[in-house]
Image 1 (cartoon, one colour):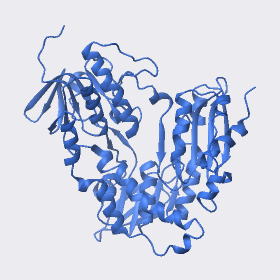
Image 2 (image 1 turned 60 degrees about the vertical axis):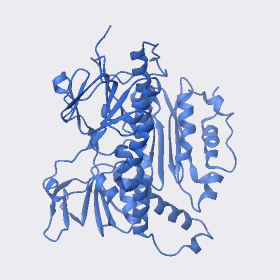
Image 3 (image 1 turned 120 degrees about the horizontal axis):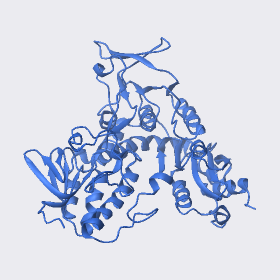
Image 4 (image 1 turned 90 degrees about the vertical axis):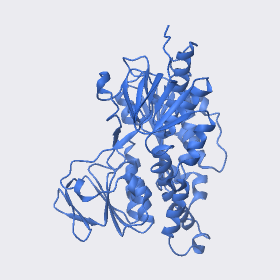
Length: 468
């Protein structure tokens, strides 16, 4: 039995939504917890990612929605007020002040220690001159951006996603490097605010999703005035004396802009955490309770473990980890089997994800390609979303697509993708179907209300047919 006296039961490094939730769930079970944070309590999502980026997108979505419906479009004049959009964005970040978030930690009985945390030994975290000891330590430090090794890029003062979501002005021209989620969302946001945007991608758009998703989105971005250039590679970037950025491409063409945004992916933020001294290097491998393999006291939760780089999935992991840490430290039974209270099973089978563009891309589970790679006997069904009555009412000339990926042996849905306006709210039904492993013949009894876009479920099931 360990009779050592510790400062805390749990120290969490990182006070984003993941770290907050690890500490909160452990505290609810009677543990004494502290959270260490070197920047703002609330983390990337609250101040530089999820919230401000979606606020930047929403005004353009609302304007386009009005213009798509006869009777409303005639009432719409003018374009977006960029200053008002930026001000609304800022309101969602509380002006980049974390007083409210810090007050919430205090109300939950969680100590906040400001400064950079570094693991300096088993169960020990150094913050400045202070060393905090704890029976368990959880790393929730998220990710950092990856800048590609393009000649001159680092010296051209590029924007990262933080710069784009916190900007106080709209550049006349913006070059976006990257065709992933952040790249397409911010390209559309700035185009709606008046920038002439050029998006450059070395591959297609949203390559991890079904192919039709990127195809639909490329057309929509082009219709919004974005110059979408796919399968091109920047070879050099320069910022001239007049401030203009020039990007030379592998085909010899040159693209110019007042700013260049690098949105080419992120990697786990594990640098300067002291992990090398613990014999840990590279990716942190964790078990289903998010405990780092080879240790009995260290946990890596959220984006830092590389399992599912999404805020909501990180919070899901945090709930499992906080409960598991409390169970282990209190000596209560651990429920870490598949779908257990202390296991992050959904990371492998049912990760929901939304790209908040217009049209949106909402997906969960496996794509067709990944399902086949995993050895499943796959059957897919697709349907035109625009043919559903609810979609036709939503917007004139509504276009979109829906696809289900079914494990034909078990007759259960293992993946779903919806592309279209306002399809994000369709996603949870698909997530429930996958997590619950609801048989296709039972889904026939889940009747969608008419006229809603959810009627697409009936159309997909009709295309699939009742299992024999």
